[in-house]
Length: 280
Image (cartoon, rainbow, N blue to C red; front, top):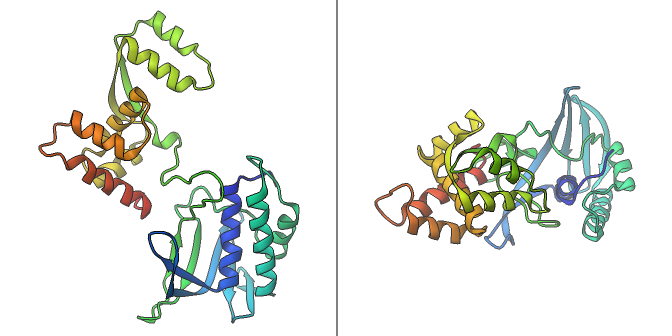
């Protein structure tokens, strides 16, 4: 197994801790568990491709978890063991100074519990899938959850990728100047290249690179691609990364000609909420 970063190891840590607890708690805005507000976990489900293998961790009682491989019972493991392994993994994650690292002991334990990967497949929108019990209704839904870890760097709501690229038109820059700008290869080359473009020319938002991503943005608001595009432009031009400051500045500039000041903050909150609730 190749080395994993703290966020990736945290996904495995959450699996072990949930198996130990046997329940998932609700929390307040400070992430403090709410006493008595929780859902008992019936089972945690992990599916692996291309093998299409399904592993289920069934919460038997306060002492044991049963492991099933493709619906066949393999073994039972004590929750005291799961606690020991979760505690060990937590200590290793917190103490590591490396960007990416291996944890040999934990990798060996993963084999014992039929856990073939640290993280869920990148094709999936959720990081962990569970069947939980709703005490109030008696319903047992299967739900997917995203895992955001604060053990390493700050986690992001929307991970940047090729699918989230925005395309802009450059004007006022000659071919010779563009070649010179593209040769900038500093540590902060993207910011430095953008700064050079802004100093002699201009950038105008065209579209998103990925049509599905654009459709998802437009599902939230028909002008959401343009709004995010303008946010990106201002962020690079003024070197601002604080969302509140970005929205305040965009409101003052009003590049989309909205009729009232609260439009930008309202629409951006809709965007953040949609990403957080996995509408994408």
